[in-house]
Length: 114
Image (cartoon, rainbow, N blue to C red; front, side):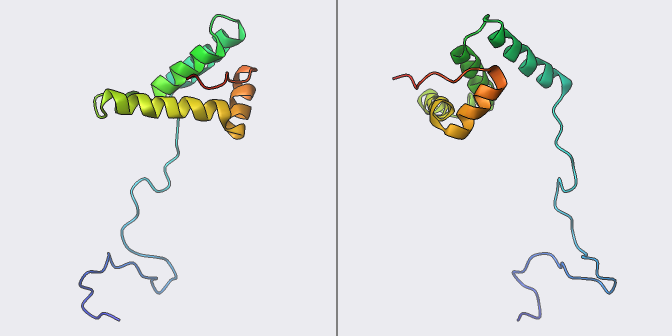
């Protein structure tokens, strides 16, 4: 047991009332929210697939590009392509993800491309 608390984290201990004192983690208690624009765009894409305007493959390509857009410029192009291809392969082979895609667009993702 250390007395001087050197090398220890912040002092987090129960108070006399039973409450925990000390700094609160950032983001604690915040609710995750998706903007209306993101919801509308996702719904629009699904409707375009259901109407036949987009194929399931085009839909998944769009969603993978959207999910990895923050990596553009941070990863080398071949690394980014690897991440995108890995995501697409998982979307087509992972049973849970296949079920999610089927539930969203009403069709099963095509098998992975070579």
